Each structure stands twice: as structure tokens, then as C-alpha cells.
Image (cartoon, rainbow, N blue to C red; front, top):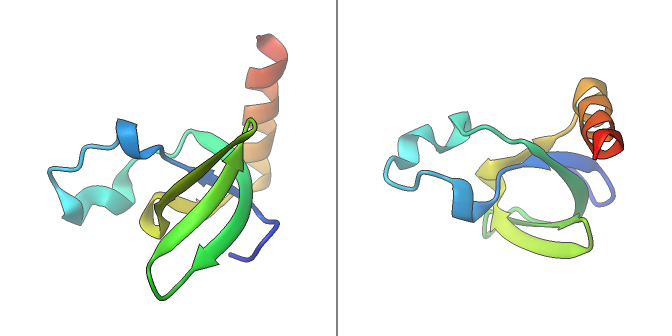
Length: 78
């Protein structure tokens, strides 16, 4: 992942933090723009709907075309 990429991610407040070994399996329903990826500290900053989220990098991954289309459809239905 690099700056400017669209990523799908999970918000920290919605993650089950009791089982760290399963964090990579958490659903990532949100799509945003990657602002910063600190590989050393394992953090990313994602811009989503005007808010900046700082989360662990395990909760973010590069979004594919289907993720982007699905997210756009959810915005249009609102």
C-alpha cells in the first residue's frame, strides 16, 4: 500500500479486540484513501468521509474494483 491508494478498513471501535490472532480476519466494510503508512510502527492513517482514522495496519488492505463499486452503490442508495 502506498499513499493515495484506496483501501478497505475496519474501524477500531467495531473490532473484537479480545483475540489478536484473528484480527486479520475482521470484516473491512469501509473504503477510504490511505494518507500515511508507517510500516515501522504498524499504523496507517485513512481519510474516510472527511474524518482521519489512525488504525493498525492489520485492519487495512488495498481495495479492489469490486470493493469500490460496492461502496459507491451504498453511497448512491442513501
